[in-house]
Amino acid sequence: MPNPFNQQIIDEFRANHGRVGGPFEGERLLLLTTTGARTGAPHTTPVAYYPDGAEQVLVIASAGGAPRHPDWYRNLVADPRVKVEDGVFVYDAEAVVLEGAERDRLFARAVEAEPGWAEYQAKTERVIPVVALRAVPKDGPPTMAVRSPGEAVQVVHDAFRRELAAIRTEFGRNQGTTLGAQLRVNCLTLCQGLTLHHTGEDTALFPFVAGRDPSLAPALERLRREHEEIAVLLDSLRRAVSAEDADPAAVRSEVERLTAELEAHLTYEEEVLIPALEPASA
Image (tube, rainbow, N blue to C red; front, side, top):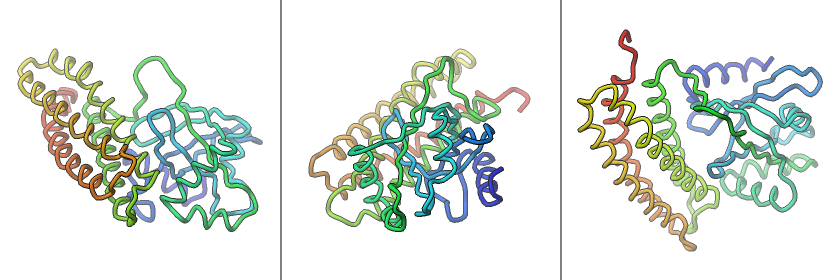
């Protein structure tokens, strides 16, 4: 069983779809379930993670600089098949321990974003592992811990809001004249996620809603137009982030512009879609 501190975080995380308070408020957390190397029993642990594109996320087995690897790391070395809960989706993943130059590059990227990782490394003789969690493809729709399609819309929207808030906070910490490498990746991963989300809505969700309630056609057309407008903002952000000499102030301005437009879009979409997707008895 998790210790009482971890169990409190796990319970809060699951009850609030990834949102927690206290010392981890605003931080990127996921729940990682591994299979006990000795017991064969499932063990769930809250861990910090870093975005790394659409295909994987990264976790760091620091254990606060302790001399031994954390239990969850030893478990996934014995059995790399794990379960990930990110507050929106629950999915199986393959845990890949990164080695050599790739490990060093990604650990350095994490240290640039949060110098505390270097302090942990300095405290221990072991090389702190970096692990990539790569989703295992599955048939059918993704698994979500929600009670209705309307709640699913709200949960996904809130996750994008949290990610934008985290990125804006990270810009506050980025005091240099260059754009941090991990911050660059965070922005590009957000752009990927929003593009995929809006494509899914245009091709699947909106036609489904239109079939249920044809009177919503004008609202859905407005939402599609807003998707096109947001796509332009995402392209501007990508170009600003991808520039070799990316100016942090210019990128931050693009993030703020995207945030304002996206918040207005999400709010309107919730007003339109959630009532249409909730069960009639709700």
